[in-house]
Image 1: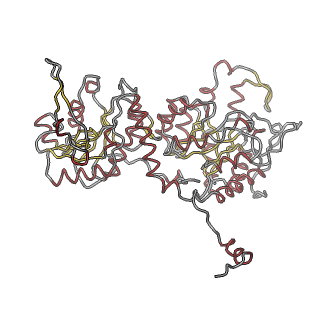
Image 2: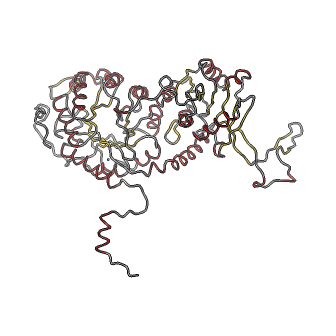
Length: 566
């Protein structure tokens, strides 16, 4: 492509070596539900910033301790792509019943998940979070620090089938009856028995065996399911119990009797949630695709040359990419001690590995210049971050970042980046399923990118159908693809399979010096990449369904088909 003449000329030697090595032709390398541009994303709403309803003093509370024994950290275990506690908490927010919603926890990891999702967090007294502590002790601890609370709804994280409609209807009944407390129940058609400990004899509790009722002739029994409880703070303070005084009941569907206390419950609930989530989201899943977001991964292919980097950013813009991405690291932190003093031949001569890594790093002033250059031509420039220092630097100037495949097992870094950036991407290369699950639970990324970290990656090892697995497993994240293969066809296939974001390494010349150059896409290929992805999105924009007849075919029908005689 012809670039503006104001741009600097190509980077001179020694960055381009004298010998060109043969390689496959790499000429070249858009979404299900496109994301709002990260620059326009709003920060999570917190209790200090905005209330959620006009019901002043009506709070929702989820007690989520970190020391659960049966299922460690079950409160943030992934259920249908979302941390467990988020199901009931999101229902509370969507119900528009509550002035404020809180998670009370003694666990920093759970607190981080709660903050990321915009819930208020109460620092729970550890004495109320032991194995022997009651829920009432946790309630008392919370109320002591929130004197403005007049009515409290205790939500159970282990009841993820609670819906916003249940909370809204329960609140309506609670208010209408001017009740002191409310209990949730399900209707069960079960015959109850008791056994006399002294005699060992059994006796029926709720029916007469000689007059055994048929199901259709019997209303059944109302059983407490523990999904949530409403109660006034006044009644609680009098009795120390969540249920007292004038009590009303809200009946819920039979499946909400399922609670998560044992590992087998988690399996059952996952199936129920995935089925319910899928059914609830059919409309959204069957909406048209509109575009594929494309990241031009410059990485370190600029070799520390600002002029070359700007040319690549401009090329990404001309090609139609929405983003250009760099890599940012503090070499003093990232380079292993054993590698720092090793000598290496580079375009700058024979220098230590640490010196080489510093040569190809941009400082803060240069980063700002590149981001501002991107803004001037309307393309978002951001970076993968490799350490906390880089997170702090990049977070000053951009709201989007990425955790590279090499670091998704660094959970501390993932959490730190999640706190600093509004929009977070991860790649899954060189990672096990457990690694990915742990990372997702820790930082709830907005985009999860399938990738194979082999440079370049053979087609037979791309495993593109893993994209389908990710889409099913993480329905609340956008699924993308980061490719390191030769050619473009397989990237187009990834988009056809549903990848909504695509990332490919880009370079000015694949024969330049550098480890990533040969598996990168040159500028002509970048143009083909964007056009190809756009064409695939257009070709797959309609959801599965009955065959459509388009205008072009109607004309052919008129000219080529014989009219049927009456």
